[in-house]
Length: 275
Ligand code: ADE
Image (cartoon, rainbow, N blue to C red):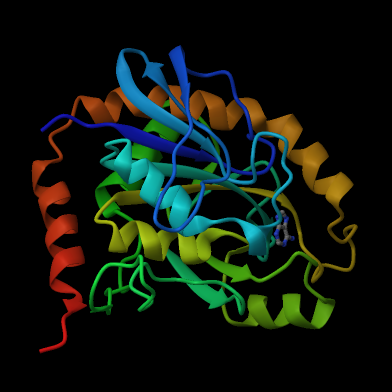
């Protein structure tokens, strides 16, 4: 089975120049338009599709990202895999700004987002979808990314729990300490519902999280600001790009038939139709 890799670029990676043979295309979906045009092309001969989560001009705030349209458009484009990047704040001292965290779990603190394609509206697919979330991120894809990071000597963490907050404001110190006390690794504003929708769509999803700051819990460090987060991301952007360029051909060299079929079966068997 051939693969096509969707790459959703988060804050700081809105428009990376990493594709050969770029072709831009506008998509429309039953859920509206995605954040921007999809750019298809190749990384070392492997077909990929790039999408800027917040738009290429970074004009869409987290709550207003049309996550459903983004995932649906990548599916329409024929993607089998979705790898995303996300800037985040670290909730643990040993997870330093500039490290890479390959997420394996999430805690959902969002409040205003549609987290299913099956919402009962006219354009939505029929039924109610109860997608299992015990393992939201594709284990084999995570391992492949970790192996790639090891081979590049990038300091990384092979697992990590992200708390996704609604934003757009950052967390208060009390919230930040609460999330830390829960044992979470990092905090961001976009993993939920993106990963849930990717599962509903039967896509293999993994997230490369890049801590840019220590959020608000650590009084000896400056609490997060936009300036701090963007500057830190800029400093480390090459690590993420190197990782993407290395992992894409690794993925293409592997057989994903079983994982792709499992993901599709999980998605289809999770839908309850009325009778
Ligand atoms: N993105 C980058 N840093 C963040 C933080 N501390 N909280 C939420 N989102 C972030």
